[in-house]
Each structure stands twice: as C-alpha cells, then as structure tokens.
Image (cartoon, rainbow, N blue to C red; front, side, top):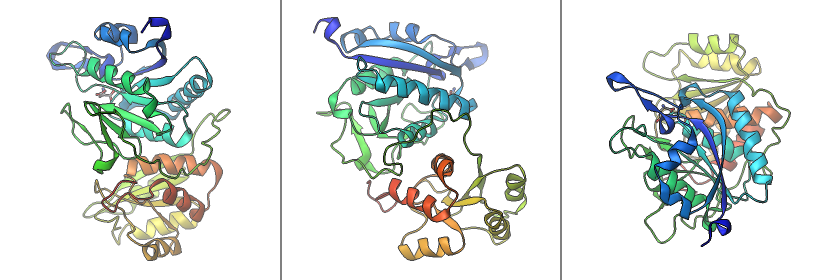
Length: 342
Ligand code: DAS
C-alpha cells in the first residue's frame, strides 16, 4: 500500500523505560530518548502506518502527576477530534501504565483506538522489548477491530483492557496480566482484538476535563496485620476528598482502623472499600453492597486499589454522594470479580 494511503497514527510520548538510556552499573535513565529514535529500531513500522509524534512528558512513570494526566487528556482529545488521525499510541512507563490507561478509559469514549505500550528493558539492552511493543501497539491502533473497545494496553504480544490489566511482575517481559482470560486478545491470533462486548461506562459520554487544572485528592491506605488508624487520620488531615482502603481478603477492615474510616465518612470524605488481593470482588452480593452503603462505604467491586483511586478521583469531580459513586463503580466493574470478564 502506498505510504500516503496508510493510516496516520498519533504517537504521544510520556517517557518510561521504553525511551530509556542504560547507565553504568546496570541502571538506566527513563524517558530521555526521543520517540523518533525509537522508531528507527522498528523500520517495519513504516509499512503499517504513518506517524505524527508529540512529546507530552519525559518522566519515569513512577513520577506521574495529575497535571501530566490532564495534559495527556488534552492531547488525546485533540487527536480524537482530528479527522486525519486513525488511532493513538501512547508510549508510557510500565510502573503506572495501568493507572493512566484507566484514567483515559474513564475520561473518554474513544471512537478510535487508544493504545498504551511501554517496555520492561531499555532500547540499548539485549532482548529489548520496546521495538516489538511499539510495532504491536501501532498494528492494533491502525486496525479497525480495536475501535470502540475503550483504552487498550498492548505488551508482550497481548492486548489488554485498561480496566482489567495489571503489572503483575517487577521485571519479566510478560509482566502485564489480565486476571480474566476473556479480556485478553493475542496479536498472533486471527485478529489482534477479541470480539468482546464493551462494558457499561460510568460516565456515559466521558468526562469534560477541559478547564480542570487539578483532580480531587484521593489517597490509598493499605490494610495489614496490626493496622492502626494513624495513616487514615493523616490522609484526612492532609485534605483528602476521598480514601481507598486496600483491605485484606475481600476488603476486610481491621477493627483498630474502622473508627477512623467512620469518622472520615462523617467528615464528608468518600471512602471506597477495596482489596489488596489481586483478583475478585469485595462485595459478592447486593446485600454486601447495602451493608457497605449503610455504613457509608463504597464497595470497589473488582477494581484494584490504584484503579479504584482513579475512578473515585473522577467521580468526585461531579458528586460527593456515596450512592452516586457506588453507581459509577457498579457500572465500570459489571461482571468482573466473579471469575468472568465483563
Ligand atoms: N521506568 C519505569 C517507568 O517509567 C519502568 C518502566 O518504564 O518500565 O514506569
């Protein structure tokens, strides 16, 4: 196909190992290579799509901020509105990729593919995975089957939903995992994206983030043996508008921490009850949910704490009513946490 007829993909660079440079002693500096240089390592991309590159940030994604998220959202919004652009690929660090993917998946109802990818090894390391991940991400973003599938993460030959994907390994090239097999597409298969039916969306028409300069502050407090109330109290004192409690088991809360959560709720902080366990829902039934709401808690469904934080942040833009926030969680997590994917 002549180059001029190839789809045009917007490539938005935010940094990460994929754009890293190795340093002496086995370390590396993330986010320092220009995206154009990364494309040189995968020349076959030129036969898949034309690319328009934009630099949004150049950070290790452990340093991700609300301000960069809002800058990235503005860029995604512009590219979605640009009729010359067929799809969007975002180069991102792997450490908070699942959170950024979830943020974009909640904020937009993209009519075009929006695909995040990254790398577990810097480009100058033997076996670097970045070039193959970029190629796979562009192949998915240039394909019609990825349209109206929400935001996707493509890593190591697999296609994941933003809602489900987690970084499940600190170092392996196969670090990204979706707990529910049905929500995974394989690039090697007949089509890079499975024919899943999209799930209900909490914000029916996405969110209008233009003009918003910051997001509501939401903190996560981790449950554990011997948990006390101090960190919950500290988060409230620091001005958190929302709290996510990452409880043990099915989101269970230590009796020494529970009074602090009740006092936070009484003070108007919206508290989401999540679980530190990587798979399963915290409220298995409507009765569980009703019990939570009676005590002012919002059950996170099957969302992990870091994604529950994103949904709570965005929900708090429009409301502080726990039952409205609960409806957002119900809509977004429909079908997960009971062994099947939505
Ligand atoms: N450098 C870390 C990050 O930016 C890890 C990575 O990209 O793989 O998230």
